Length: 263
Image (tube, rainbow, N blue to C red; front, side, top):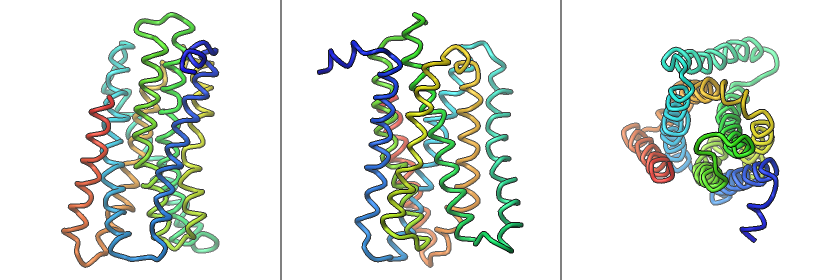
């Protein structure tokens, strides 16, 4: 079976690999079904863990690869990564202001938080999907270090990392009063962009390699903005603020260990 997969067109393999990462995202989102009733302490602790997961992912899954890739492409690394990071945060900052204006008429504060959370994770998944696509597409061009085995290793690593990220979306949504099924659906939906981005990255590998460092940093900036603007402040409404801070450290540690072991 494994030999059959390796014999497929690299673009098709990129699609299958990102379908796997999407499936793992949905699997992580399914943890929301463990919580039949809303318990503020439990969900606040999960919110703290989600914040830690996103902070760690923003560096090890996004900023660190962006720096390495920009160096390898002989770019002005600090300029590209800094501009990408700030642009990601600025996009959500502007979106936040727009939502605040719309909130007076149509969009509630809860809906604003939901949109920001889903947007940040989705932005994070787009460059990850592109990275997988580029890894598989590079084998078509015989680029240095490009092998199907390394591409699949990257996909498996990103897939495992997506598990806590799916949870990082579904649990906070549940905390906002969203139904179990809808929280799971939206948590899973955040990963559906990866197969699309994976195929796109494989098809446009040479061009995507040039903009991928910026996109990775862009996604990191968006994630950090959401963590500092929404997740951490929300978890700190709990009476046990210090305990919620510890859960944030736990989430960071979990994601850090996954990224370092699978990097």
